[in-house]
Length: 278
Image (cartoon, rainbow, N blue to C red):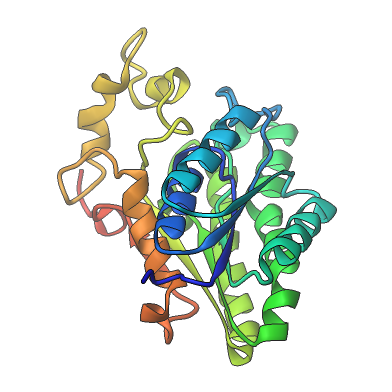
């Protein structure tokens, strides 16, 4: 028996990285999955996003766990894409009990050099896309008087990192969104929480541009070159966490083990949010 037998979970940004990990772990615990991903690049990131083949690989990984999955290519900035995914999940599986709002991007620049396009795309995807995800799933949850929404936030939602003012603004906005949504929805049986990872070993982080941000002193830094810098951001001496570490927190908050937990921000950051010296 799994913790999520008979449950259905919608996961955005599910083609790879954290999203794939959340989908696979939920499926391993019995949930049917509605997996949504943009499956194309956007204009302001300098790393490749997930592809349709990546989303198909997520489906294969879920099915390898004995799970059921429905995949949808969709843009969290487009309400009809999310509404369509929810409708398809309801038609195929009968309910949407859990939503993991995971889709997001990152880019960087000093606050006064952030372009209009960077700012707009960041807010549209990371903040507004999460609000649209909540809008899409809540009506079905209200009908059942039950549901759990988990927002995948960031340590930047609890701090003010350099070169990430637009990212931090979106992530701080998600904290307010989560708290207000919890106030409104928890009386109706729908819990809303967020998880706040540190750096996670995914393609969103592990690429040449970010390596250069961490080690501007080197001409062509690699993943190995950022270990020491990244580790100094944490109290637990690790440079980053793994996707499954975040998934463990997501599954806890989505489960009945957390039935009286709502409106909370749960760091999964190796102590980064309490770090006082570097």
